[in-house]
Image (cartoon, rainbow, N blue to C red; front, side, top):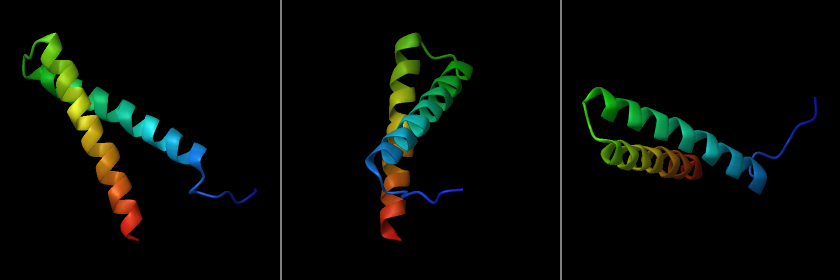
Length: 63
């Protein structure tokens, strides 16, 4: 198996898209369980996705 560069731009974009999707789904599911409206579900998903993406990227840069 070929080793690959983990810092390539395509790898970073794909990782951020994956975490954005996970964060959006998690945030919307939590808001749905709490009985929020559709608009609040979307906003909660966006906030959770941003926290995941920026929190994980910031943690990776410290190493």
